[in-house]
Amino acid sequence: MSPVNEKIAKALSELGISLPEPPARVVHAPKSKKTEKSSSESTTSQTEQTEQGDKPIHVSLIMPVEPTDYVEPDWAQFLFNVWDDMDDTPGVMVDGPRGTGKTQAVMVYAARRNKPLLVCNCNQEMTPDSLLGSPRIDMKGVGGDYLQMGPIALAAKLGAVLFMDEVNYLPPATQAVNNPLMDTVQNGIFLPYTGERIEWENPKIVAAFNSGYAGTREINQAFFDRFEPLVAEYLPLRQEATLIVNRTGCEYQLAERAVRTANAIRAAAKGDNGNVMPLEFDLSPRALFSFARRVVSGKQDINRAWKEAVIGRVGSGIRRSGARETVRQLSIQIGNFQV
Ligand SMILES: Nc1ncnc2c1ncn2[C@@H]1O[C@H](COP(=O)(O)OP(=O)(O)O)[C@@H](O)[C@H]1O
Ligand SMILES: [Mg+2]
Image (cartoon, rainbow, N blue to C red):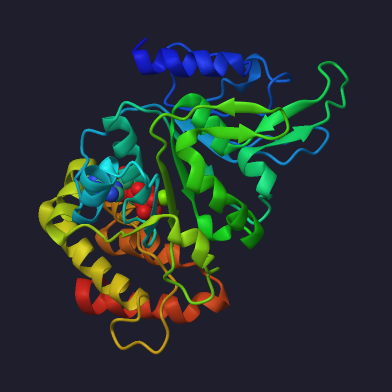
């Protein structure tokens, strides 16, 4: 076991769970100190709900492994080279559409520093307590009361980089409570319910959101101010096309045609093409990987693959019909797809 894995294993064992052998890439976070023994060794990321109806804490732990095909985008240079030295600013707030590689960049950032990554998907039900930890009553009566650790306390305990995804969904009160915490996080974390102090050496917290759509929840300005702002953008055309080729084995020409078309759709999504309404549709490289894989498998022709993998992702509902038609038109005009 590498030193970092030993550290994680020790922290996890204090929480009542042990690392599977060989270590799985994703280990689901413990629900509690006392009621979880070996059952948390899951490698899936399903969330658990207990009999007494505890809110699951939406976190996954990712071991530090750098993907072999990672391309370093310009926007992520700040993350890798500048922010890392900014000891007095432990947080970065990345804003960008789906598929710009926010999650991937944070995984690589953590892996390069040999730290695990704790991923927390924020939601509107997260209370101020749930970020740090909240008391629970053990209804089965076996272990008494316990503290359900929140993502911030867990990250501190594991020495992990903390990734708070979709942070704009946190209720304003929860964002506000986070502010003093962000100001003092270098001095460790204090858990008011147990009186425990957790040291957190070189804390690093990345928050991500997508401000692109009209109607998405705004971020509280005081909260935003605690983080260094960073705007994520899609990879340059040649790099994204090469990535598709490397992942799927398709022809470069086909990958470039897909990315060129995708970029037109992405511009429309931002409202850049003079469209009356932004599309409210993020075209992630995942859709393009899927398109290319379908073609490479030989089971679908190019047009059918594009229709299902890309246009199919817009959604079929009546409310999506405008967006779907725009995507279809751009697919015909730019990509010459017969859809
Ligand atoms: N710079 C990159 N190098 C290699 N693959 C990338 C890069 N950026 C994104 N990807 C791939 O594109 C997909 C979407 O990336 P992801 O990090 O999930 O985006 P986001 O979190 O912004 O929605 C994933 O399959 C990821 O592996
Ligand atoms: Mg993501």
